[in-house]
Image 1 (cartoon, rainbow, N blue to C red):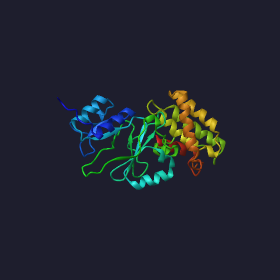
Image 2 (tube, rainbow, N blue to C red):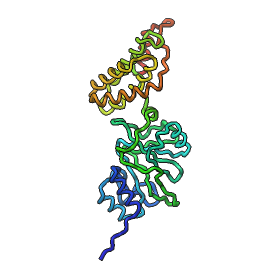
Image 3 (cartoon, rainbow, N blue to C red):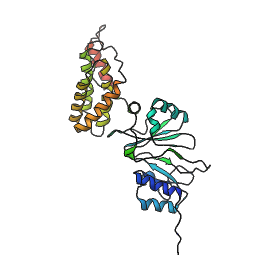
Image 4 (cartoon, one colour):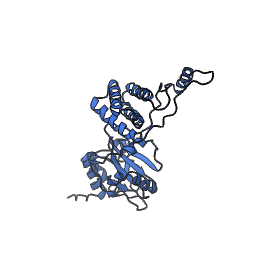
Length: 300
C-alpha cells in the first residue's frame, strides 16, 4: 500500500496563496528562477489550480514559491532596506500593507492599484525600488529558502487582492509617467489669468480626447494631475472635471470610469501646484506666432 507523502510547507503556502487569488509557480530549489523541469515556460505557467500546484510540489517538495500578483496588484520590491525606511516615513499608510522581508533585509509590499491604472514594470521613479506584480513580474515568496539557508518571511500577512490597501495617491502620482507636453498651450497672456488657465485646460482635454484605446485611462489620469496643478492658481475644479470627463468620454471611456479617474487625478494634482512659466511674448525680429510655431515643430 502506497503511503501518502506529507505536505511540504511550500505546498501549503502555495495552496494558500492560490486560494486568495494569486497565481504561483515552483522555483528551482534554493534559487529564485522558475523550476526548469516543472515550468519550462516560466511565469507563463503560473497557476491557481489546486491539482497542478499539488502535482508540482509533490514532484519536488524542496521547490521554492514564486508568487505572481494579478493585474490590479502592485508589489513594491525594496532591494535597499534604507529605501523602505524612507518611503514609509513619507507615506505612513504603507505600514498597514501586507509585506514580507527578503533575505537581504529588503521588503515586498503589496498594494492595490485604482481601477484601470496600468504601470510599467520598467519604471525607476524611486531609487532602490522595483515594481513587480501587475500580472507581469513575480516575486519570491515565503517560505522559500535559498541555498545559504536564508528565507523569506511575512512581517504583515498577505490578504486577497480586493482587501489590499490602495497605493497612496501621492506615491502613485510619482510612479505614473508624466504627460507629454500638450501643443498649443501658449497664450499672449502673462501670469495665471483665467484666459491662460482655460487655454491650458483645453489643451489637456484635447490630448485626452485623442488618446488611442489602451492608453485612455492612464492618459486621463496624467492630464487630470496636470490640471489639478492649476487649481491652486484659480482654475475651477468642477469646470476642470467636466472638461476632462467630456474629453475622456469622447475617446471612448465610460462616464463612471472617466469621472472617478478625473477626480482622483485632480485631487492629487491640487497638492502639487504647477509652476507656470511666463507665456511667450513678441521680442526682437521674430514674431510671437513664429516662435510658437517653431516650438510646436520641435515637439512634433
